[in-house]
Image (tube, rainbow, N blue to C red; front, side, top):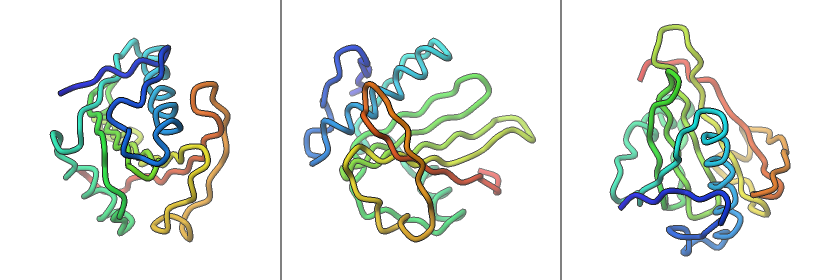
Length: 152
């Protein structure tokens, strides 16, 4: 069942099994606010058990040989402004997003965001450096990314 993320009244709905539920809810709300303000897009998620993760998992595996041990909790998938977007929110507090430009020669990348207070997952620790940014909704977010080279 879809859940519309409310960035004004942050809720842990769908994330309660995470030890970082509050921080992850803030991170999810931060993303919802960004898409509402920039694209007037309403950010909705659904349980990972209700949504296919094959596309995201294939990109992670093919591009960087990454397979996360953390359990995915929620998924968002939509198209906006010429981009196919996908988000996966993991029980560990990790958020992975895929930005895939639909047209030839457009930007394509995978982003990682760590909820405030979480450790860098071992799958990423030795391969990525994380920059910090502050968010009123999510506290201190650490993020990194890589450019997608293949066609998906």
